[in-house]
Image (cartoon, rainbow, N blue to C red; front, top):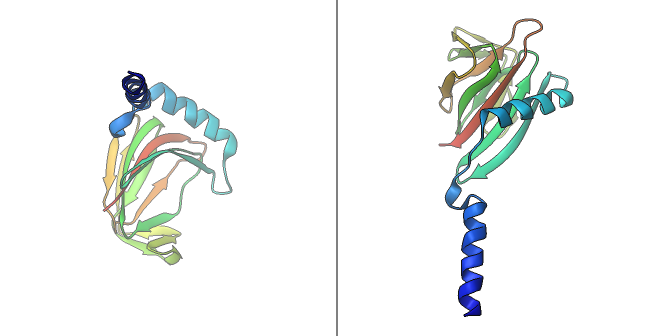
Length: 152
């Protein structure tokens, strides 16, 4: 009898804790996390936090108050959902003056010959692995976004 009660308690705790890889992030939670991250900006005017990892996926919230550098990931795709603010994403093309920053990772000052997309709240952009991309913000602009990084 005690074993059955113990098993039921474990199952109940597992279900409450998001067993099976189910996670729910409300827009209000992402916005609040962005406000918190705004107090922790680095020299590039960016702050981000990993909020969960599940299999080949990493889930993050980021807040940016300045343009980013061009990025390229050999094995990692990005799915970006804009929560608040507006940003211009440049993707494709060629990274200007690329530098390897880690195994399978390159960064550079800008992208030449890329495609520009203006994004706002609710917009979603999927960047496959091996596609250069860069976030550009207008002076004084701020953006909070949710990112799912997927190892392909």
